[in-house]
Image 1 (cartoon, rainbow, N blue to C red):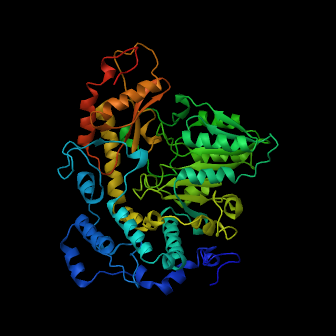
Image 2: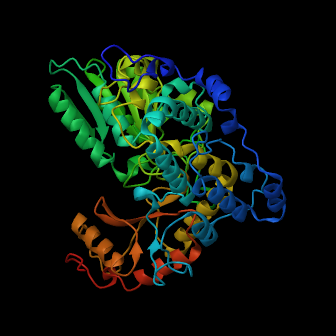
Length: 525
């Protein structure tokens, strides 16, 4: 295929990838071995007597690390790993999973490089990638460097499209042409903000909640300043995010995985509606799970309320913490009248950093409004092509995504059960009140209030939170401390590699924390 007019050969295949659905047939015709990888007889025999974890590790080593780089071969990227397809879905969690598929230096793990490893309870910040994902990405990177022109001009796009189709299937999105792979959710939501048809005459308004992600609130302020629009910030109180349908905090019925299972927060909806102007509101940013508070918000109900009042408003959902934790279904997407949904693959999915998913839910977003911030050869060829190519970069994290999804398809249920159990155990062990009932929180995170018998009613500050977090860090405990409504909370994340002993270690360290000796003066390190 010749390059586009004015091109230099780069991106010469974009015309074929403007619509990604037909690509599946072409991929099967050109490289059927990629989709039909099978184990040899010797491997199959060994799988019968091996544990699921050992099987996966052995397959990973051979398929990724031992790739010989022949001209007619590419790294396997089938969405069903042969070793996993034939292996029992045995629980692989806690330190067994940590040793198998994470690089973390964890306390109590005899294989850790430091015997005094970390009590790491902050997975929600930047995640932790599976080792097999980083190995797969390394192999893709190696493939690219063996013959860059072959890789970028002839091979790359069909593999990226396959990854998009695979994640669309995983998230139950029926139309993969609405899916784009990006570096992170912040990038996708910046693109959504910039794609709004702002009028620029000073009449437009954008609405965001004060409990939303700080980086995106700053981004929205920058965009609105440029387009002469006003930002309206909804002030949210603690009572506003308490679900009405929870009579008491029953931790045994918490931690809901289904994205459709939304808490009922009528006061939050009332405040949001009060900020919407039928004529002025042009953009609304909603969080699916709030970063600081770990509260799961009823985004479908909130978006529906906005749509009834201001049908012209563009609605974007920040789902940074959702993928790999919440279960997406067609029912959820059908109930969500938003334009754009963005979620990270490096957090709870444990994919490589630099991988996230943007979904153009509305036709107007797909057909022109959701576009990358950088224009290049893909411009004008549709959402898929425009996001695929914004100049040359390292695509290996995105190419490894199907292998991450394969792991979740086999082990995701056992990991989720383990993580939910850890959250419930943390509430009981630490004896801290959750900021919201667990059924209204992220399934693998809890924001727990730290109490102090010496506190005489003087509100805490963000300085107190930072000092306490630094104090814990100095003792080998990584967990964020948040100052919310004048109180100190720890936002605990339960990774699939964590164990109850991590919670016990945190509880033991907290017994000697500055909270027990400091009253009205700032906490000291």
